[in-house]
Image (cartoon, rainbow, N blue to C red):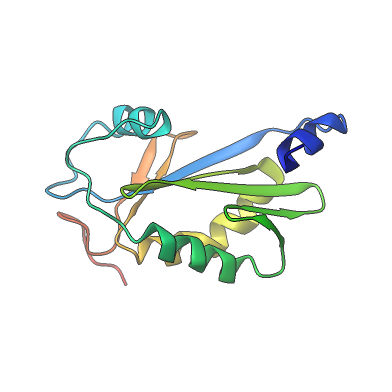
Length: 139
């Protein structure tokens, strides 16, 4: 039984919060909702750059060192979880709603330093990554 199956089998039902990171190759003028939908469904999207997603997972592991690492892309704390899935062009993160505020504050800037924009599908807002084509470098 996976960790997520164990979580749900205990009768715990919680809201979750999703974020995603990707980098555009040319400009920031794209349909972010459509891109998020495509990458969430495992589709290849033209116009996205290759990323160091292994490095991003390693950085998440450093940032979440106080959490229990259950497997490659999953961390847990009491009543909180974070799962990361990746391809060579994006990183998707799903976390318990309770984890959202402390995790977002901790990981947003380090992940954007990989040149990735942060997509928040709950608010339909995207912050461009540092050094991304057409973005203002805020480092």
